[in-house]
Image 1 (cartoon, one colour):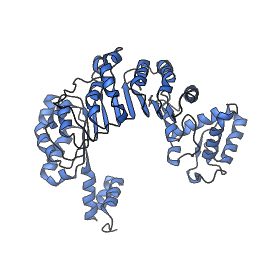
Image 2: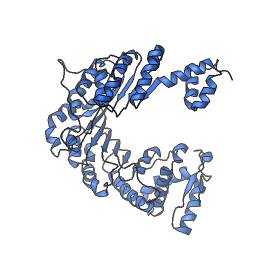
Image 3: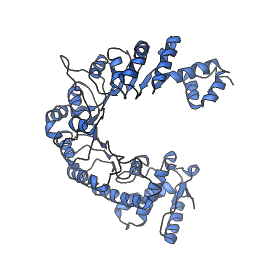
Image 4: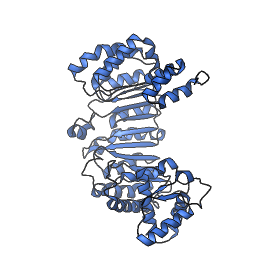
Amino acid sequence: MSFDALPNELIHKISALGSSPELISLCLTSRRLHSQSILSLYWTVELRRPVHIMKWCRAVRLRPGLADLTRVLGIRCDQTGLDVFSAFFTALRATVPRLRNLQTLVMHSSRNIVRTFYDVHFPDLTRISCVCCDYVFTFAQNHGQTLSVLEIRSSLEGDTDFALDAGYSSTPSAPPGGYSFPLLRRLAGSIDIAAELVPNSAVQDLEIYWPSDPDFISNNLPDLQRISRSSECFNKLYNVVRRWDASLVSALADHFNNMETLVFDPVTRNSQGFTPGDIQDIVAALEEHLPRFERLKVLTLRGREDYPLEQNVDTLFALLDEEFAVLRSWSGRTATMYLAILPLTGVLEYFGHLETATALSEQGLPSPTAMHPEAMLLLRWFLTWLATTQDDADTQAYLSFAIVTLGYQGCDELRRRWDAEGRIPPFELNAGSLHRADVMSSRIKFLD
């Protein structure tokens, strides 16, 4: 096999697909594949332990050309106390400035790591993602003319810290003339970070970590007002919260009613105490204020990601019934929203992948997504709901979706099984027959 005629981009993709033993064998037969494999290996560098840092620094020192290959550097080393950090500080400090082509820098685990880089300049750096500390604002401003993404993460060291400042121990102190980020499109940070950085940027995507103090709205009202004066620039707002809070919905309706995407993401979403009662107040507040969000298209309340699907199918279906009823009741409250996701059943997030929303579309089901067990379970619930719902005008779009997804004959097969057994049995979609032009043939295969 010869790779001499292939473009570098294709060789790069081939090298990214193979396993290590396969690549080693291929590299022995092709110098070009070897060079592209090395490029792939050093393009993204992920360092998770001090020993990884030392080995990488040594490799770059012995082969200086490797530094020019690196575009993404991630350091997620948890063992970064001062005693451990001092062991590799010198090597890291000497190596990192050589990364002249670096575009993304991720430093989530240690403020000490951030302090290492704060005065280093990377000419092509477009994304910084790191934990909050005093140095990060100087570092970001030094790259203000190239940054498009700035994610300053909460340290989340304890409930007390989160209550007071959402886990942010440092706040920006604006330089003379203020901050300037003309290319910034995405910003993540605390409310006061957003208040300092949003007005002098072109942010379109804003993520705010909110404190859990019950008085956080009144305490941060000046910052809210300052951000809202620039809210025409951005249309996506992600809210990271410690608890579901109905007062936040009211505040957002007052200051950010032009949002197109609105997300609420609790940091405790996978805790065992997550129950339907936890979201009653915020769901009621959303229903009340939905008409005020005149441009809203997507609304998401993120939920648990560890729901034991196979063991609690009946419970899951009951929750889906409740949440879908809420979604349908919202359809008359907004003229623009086409996707809404509620949090109790993480599987409900597959509504987006199934191209469905408050009214399921008739576009059909993409075959790769259809093979997900969670998506198939959602489809079983939906068909069960449809079979037990009285025929009315509101269900016609859903019936059309079922026919396009399952095929007309597939719907007949399921109807016969429902009449005989009173349930929708487990089934899978036949990927080979998922041709949208053919809506007659069955697209299902029963598993029992």
